[in-house]
Length: 101
Image (cartoon, rainbow, N blue to C red; front, side, top):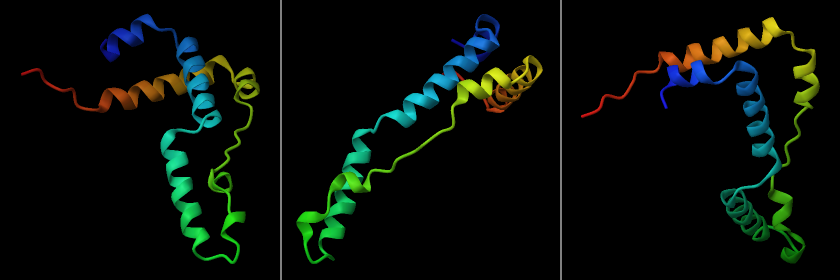
């Protein structure tokens, strides 16, 4: 689906709801790479401490907190929502399109 078609078919409110949902999904769950890197960091730390068994991998998983965006969206006016969506799509449309061979 092209960007122009998506803009025409998807209302701005639905687009904002998806962005909010995806932001929450990104913060709530760890990916496989997060565990891999935390394990590497734990192993490095174990080589420097007196009691290596006390070092836990979970200590190296970064915890993110995000303020409640649903409250923020309720406070946001329709003009502000429209302005944000137009700004997002304006940036997206500036990227060059790939040509088919």
